[in-house]
Each structure stands twice: as C-alpha cells, then as structure tokens.
Length: 180
Image (cartoon, rainbow, N blue to C red; front, side, top):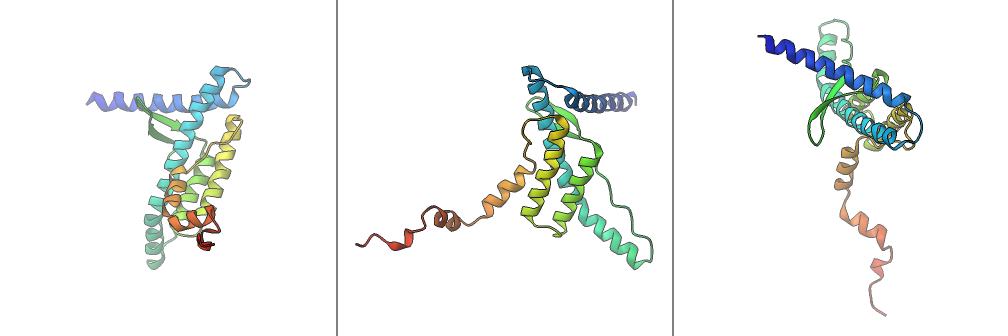
C-alpha cells in the first residue's frame, strides 16, 4: 500500500521540476551553448505539451458537446468546459518526462483543439492559430525562432493532397505534349 504514496510523491516532484525547468528557461539570457541547449530541450517539451493539449481538446470536445445537449434538454445549466491538465507526460528517447506550459497557453491550445474538432475552424486556420500560440510560448522562452506546433496535422494534410496537384504545380506546360 505504501507504493502509491511514493509514486505520487515522485510524480509531484517531477511536475515541480518540469515547471522549474520552464521558468529557468524563461530567465536564461545570453548565447552560451548550454543555455541554447537547455532552452531547445524545454521548447521541444513545450511543443509536445501543446500538441497533446490540442489532441485532448479535440477528443474531449465531443463528450463536452453531448453533456451540453443533455443539460439543455433537461433544463440544467450548461456545464463548464473542461480545462487541460497543467502537466503532460511525453516520451523522450530514454524516458518519460513531465512537461509544463503556463495555463494561458495550454487553455488556448485546448480550446483550439475543441474548435477544430467541432469544425468551427478549418485545418489551415487551426494551423495558423497554433503557430500564434507557439510563437507566444517561444517568445516566453526567449527563443530566437518559434517552434512549429501541430506538425502531425501539417503532415496529415500534406498526405491528403492529391498527387496531381503537386505535378501540375511543378510543370504548368505538361499538357502541351512533345509534338513539334
């Protein structure tokens, strides 16, 4: 029975460490190699965190909409929209770590996932808005360039493009034929 207590303590300590690392990355200045590497690592974790929060927002959107409809039909007040977890876990090459992003950024990304899932916004608008959120986090971390959020969605959209569209864009005179 004591094992869950130790596990909870270890998780809490890891969460505190994740938040402290994020805060430390925001305060580091200068161009020292160690600072750039640390900021880059935290930015990678923040990107993964935002991606997971977007997915959670999308997945929980349907259940939330159903609970809103049920409340409306039963004459109850509409329930509060769920909020993202302040910490996420992501797998690195060697371990699973906790990540942290300030709640205002996580809430924006969560709402974005919900809007995307409910088709209130399209894929390109979702990607543009995600880029704005990633830029805010990148600025908060003091990065020289913003990281790219939702790369999985970009990749998915590129796969869905018809191959003919790519070929036509590359050679506009391909219909002329070779007859001369």
